[in-house]
Image (cartoon, rainbow, N blue to C red; front, side):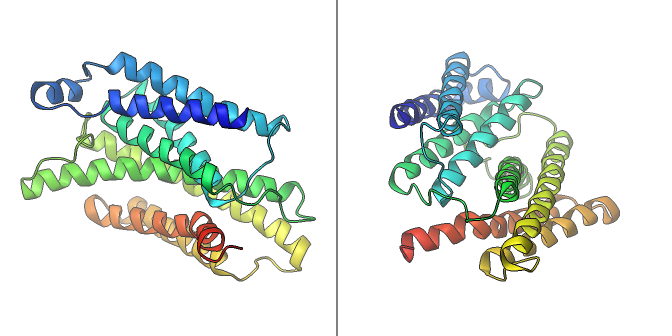
Length: 275
């Protein structure tokens, strides 16, 4: 059942990505204005894919499929949340160009779950704190993932503006740059709040299991380093007025460290070290 649901979501995401792909010439201009020739079909396909993707998580909650805590399921849940953020934003802003990229990345994340399902159990004795830590952390992944996609739109626009090069396919800004910038760092601020909550829950179950606030390992180091980078970014934005490429460098760097903290570490353990 789970394979059928995931397979349906995978096919629908690919279909939505294909239908929403950037068009050439006049069609590209139409896409920027929100009049993409296959916009409605892509919208329906993405909604169906997102619902099928959500159904796979419902199967886990109902006990019809064992929960997975590996890197691929975490990545899959992250892109499901990214798609959800996009869907809400697209109701208010013309962000059609992002749809093809989001659907393609979500489809790839689903494909990875078939080959790398990961661990099936939470650490013994971790209790509800581990589940909350994992849920908050993945939600932070989703928000920072959405912020990074918006950041790439800003970077692509800056590249086109200062180097006189065309924007990357599908990443041309479809709304004023100041509005796009505000959205980007609003998502980053929400992600930072959830990441902070996730680390607090990690302290809770770590003290219960190990007798100290943090288990010193590469996952902890990357997560705390990412938290510090995001804290500096938000402080720099709020106090020093950081904008443009300077702020984007901090956003991309912090997001890369955050990706390494769980998804990256689980990838190394599962795929490279086979643990």
